[in-house]
Length: 156
Image (cartoon, rainbow, N blue to C red; front, side, top):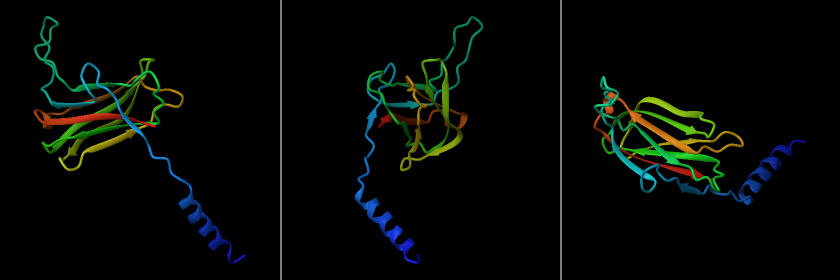
């Protein structure tokens, strides 16, 4: 009875070395209304409405990626945001579903992104459901004029 634990430990280590681990395969998700899967933006000023219902300025805080409707059995989504401008950003991320609902999976102010350390956030979709879009919302007074680059990958 005294040698049972060493045998179990040996078997656990042996089996972990013998069982292959399947690596994730990630695919870039295309931008909505753009080309490719990567966007670079500078954070704009807030929208300024006018009295007549036409905005004087519009912000560019939202970016959407369109999840392909065919063969989109993604286990998770990886959003990467980088910036050479070093500094705080206010960032929110959502998975948007066909039933007009969205799951917020990241919401943080003062996110400090540096050139050598991008922000990487992973999210899983609802069980038995896939989103049709991934949304990134970047703003904040401290980040006005700062430039960032973002991309989204769907991973199996």
